[in-house]
Length: 399
Image (cartoon, rainbow, N blue to C red; front, top):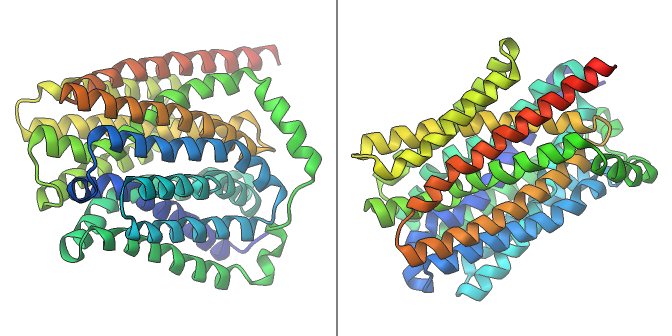
């Protein structure tokens, strides 16, 4: 077993990797208002670009979990971070829609091992009682990335142009990879990296797909992930087009920062709430908070607008934390495989929704319908959560 300092530094590396993952995928959504005239992008084209990323991410994730189980963890996880960072850097040289589409597809493929790989590393590096904390540390990179992105990327774009926004985030990943190779070369980490036996992965796919909880969590990821993707990908365009907030402005940066800070706080609040409260109560409250997005179209001023979106994202952070917990309980011995299957399912739903949002907003010149739809989607999430909890209660009672 690793010494305590070493395993927590390892978790910090995973946190940084996940943060860079979300910085890379958010770069296009944040810079889109600055790029659209030069590259002749409208909302329908942007929606397609967002969808291409998630289609590629989805297909790759279905395979990534099983491959992670059978490959050297050190090289597969570190190599994935390096690869997606190089793709992000290369996006700075895009010349139009076609090349941008290729880069988004490559980015989706390269980013797919992050969640399965990080969960697998935590499961090997930490004793069972410490794994929830380790998972919480690295998964918070999702919201940390969303929190840092508006300030970091838009500030770089303001001073050096939108192309440098892509290049700078890509370089962060290259620096991370260099530090990862140096730190994890130590002999004490050697037991973490060997691949598992091939038969384990083959058997786990069938067992997972026959599990009723898997299908309940699949509904959850298919409704929650598109909501997250909408906030990450479309809010900058929404603020610019419908609320007349200048792209790249300080106002845009701080509004997005406030919203994604709420997402981060929701993630942490869920972990604390689940220590003392029934899960059903926690996700019922989270559902009500997320549904506040339906009131956004009627917000009378900027203060109300930001407050409603912050509340909605706070609830979304709670749901994302619960989703990860549910995923871990499907198959404790094949975490990467389960995460890959569920991540792919959520990404497929996200890809379809991102394209639909682009088509809808281009034709209606309004984001009202997608915001109303969030309340309907999170209601389905709540119903799936109830079904999952009842199924687990029945299983425990029979046992």
